[in-house]
Image (spheres, rainbow, N blue to C red):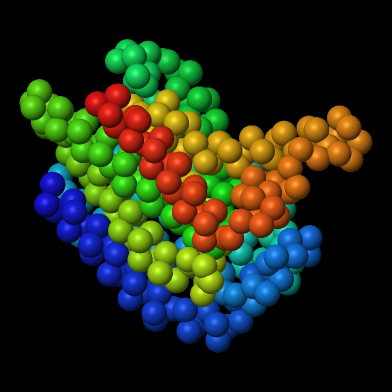
Length: 329
């Protein structure tokens, strides 16, 4: 347990150092994020550097390389998938910055990359376990081969949920910081149960997944020092897609996938608010349910400060996670 917490500290400090070293470089290279013209509240943010996800990817990677031990196949795959999604996001950010557009890669290009990585991860999830724990009722279900398409869906849902939530200073970073802190409790508890039952190989797999989870927690805590309102840097798709890939990997490589919609309730809010807005807009020929979607932009339009919205999302995520910890462990 001590080593896992030290991994979080190491990740924190490496991310912090990476931020101080790389932020001036990104500014010098003029890696400014193009701002959507219809988000008037964000026009003053034009020119703020993006690709800040590089900071915490460095911190997470170094901490994991130092603290992974024994059976770490799943954790290495999860870290590799995370970096893979980060590379896709980096390419997307690079296109945005180079061509001064907010579109980035074409939709089909991102879908191909994301589906490929999700399919690889889902295959390994199938090899690992096809069982899922059902929250609150202390039961489990075995999906068999269906775990593969199900896991691919989880990757698409989670990565898009995190990406949509990355719309305000500190919002995605703060929400994911809380999520990973609590999700690590589930993994550590499951690992302890495996250790007590003598399943040592599986215990070390969960141990290393806990290292990855808390390394992410520590890294995001450091990143928030740069990203909280007013943000000195944005994580960009480099960070948002990487975080989505990491959270999805943690879900499908454990038996806690069905816990994600509860603990990640604010990612669900982001996705559902966009879906409702689009469907209602088309059905009513131009009318809207929200002033703007995703929902955090609606809150911003009715006068709530960015920092308050970020804190609100963190608090709601913490409450949802606490419910899971209290009633499911």
